Amino acid sequence: MKYGRVTYHPVLGTLDKRESLRFLFDDQEFEAYKGETIAAALLANGVRTLRRHEETGTPRGIYCNIGHCFECRVTIDGITGQRACLTVLKDGMNIRSGEMLPTPLKKGAH
Amino acid sequence: MTDVLIVGAGPAGLSAAISCAERGLQVQVIDEFMRPGGRLLGQLYQETDGSWWNGIEEAAKLQDKAASLGVVLKLGISVIDLNQSEDGWIVYTSTGILKAPALLLATGAAETACPIPGWTLPGVMSIGAAQVMTNVHRVRVGMRGVIVGINVLSMAIAHELELAGIKIAAMMLPAKNMINKDVGDPRKVMQSIVRLGHLAPSPLLRLGSGLMRYSSLQSLGLHLYPKRGFKVWGIPVQLRKAAVEIEGIEKVESVRVANISPEGDIVPSTSRSLPVDFVCMAGGLYPLAELAAVAGCPFRYVPELGGHVPLHNARMETPLAGLFVAGNITGIESAKIAAAQGSIAGLSIAAFHQVSGTEEDLLESIQNLRITREKASIQFHPQVADGRRRLESMFSENFS
Ligand SMILES: Cc1cc2nc3c(=O)[nH]c(=O)nc-3n(C[C@H](O)[C@H](O)[C@H](O)COP(=O)(O)OP(=O)(O)OC[C@H]3O[C@@H](n4cnc5c(N)ncnc54)[C@H](O)[C@@H]3O)c2cc1C
Ligand code: FES
Image (cartoon, rainbow over all chains, first blue to last red):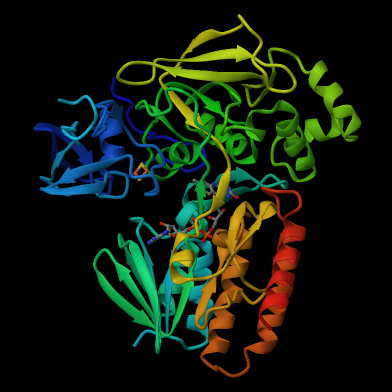
């Protein structure tokens, strides 16, 4: 389900028309508006899961939305560990979610 | 040459930048967020006189004033580390190293976690995350959600979500566990909202304080408190229900809710699932003070201020030469107070740079802060003024 945007607001007013742009998230193309963060644009498109926990593989999304918790870390144009909630989208950005990693040293893993 | 570097472009940092620049200093402000204003940006509530406090407009006023005075503002840059050198402070950022003789830390607050099982599922977020997503980014956090944690901030934001057309099915407490203690105890929660009632921006709090003026009536109040809760802005506020677990496989599908005793203990066999597509966790705020710790500033634990705070005096000076603090890093209070503290810090920094004629203005700005605090329409802790006085005397006992 797409959650969409708060276009009309009784106190804050109506959203201005903004230029749109396109970006890739795990090879799928999405549309967003100029000035939006990766986390906001993905949520508006109905995407809540930004990564899998490195060890357990459980899904994770934004938690604090202001850069404190690092739950939203993704890989942007090849650079790992970037916060989706603080990064403003650029046209053509290529974003990848974090995946579960092997844990060869963990007890019982082999 | 930068005379002062300010970390944080919230109300404290921007107000400090303005008062420094007005006294002729070269000011640089850095912030990791993409817009200036800090947590002011998300704020939207009605003052007791009915007028709206619109954080976006307030932030724009501060930004414009700072820009007109020549303040250099850099956004999207995170401060990672810092240390003191012979001629001032060296600040390591995500894009390089900056230096200045004076450094102001105005990094604000962070949210305290109140975890329950399932809280890592996508769709669970802090209450502040929902505020920023709704009011700043203007994206819907979901269709129908619950708020876990009842306090001044979550009540204000519940109203903001409703204003944006986002349905809140209920507000309730987090189940008590080894981490959630007072936040899961209906009596403590009731006491804290009732004590803040006289300045409440909300009908519930005003109603609560009218009903329960005497503390002896408070436990009675809870027993009388209707099991189904009562409504504020159409939202059921349920002090006698707790969220026990958040359910879902790939994302939030429902919240398991149980009845609780006035002490916060789960009443057996009362739980049921409430279908929702998002959950906001509201555990309260604490000062975001890591950078002050990294700098080597001593700390004191002052619960009225929200926890561990960097030691500082009424002039916003820390015991370290050239290091200043202002805003929520010094204790949890509203944005107007953060701004007033920023103005003081700016004048102190001007005095540090030996700008003449600042002393009188500085004393006046300290007086103004006291008045702003007395008139505050949102307060996070009822004894905040006592906490401030205690911290100031700890400073003067140790350093003066
Ligand atoms: C999520 C949240 C919601 C809030 N909502 C309300 C509300 O509705 N009403 C109310 O009265 N109060 C609210 N508050 C309290 C709020 O802290 C104050 O109202 C006020 O904004 C504090 O101002 P400040 O300048 O001290 O900090 P802030 O406004 O928090 O500004 C601090 C700035 O510092 C930046 N920063 C922090 N660390 C770094 C770093 N390492 N590198 C670079 N930049 C950094 C941040 O990005 C931020 O922009 C809220 C606080 C939070 C955390
Ligand atoms: S959601 Fe917390 S850092 Fe991005």
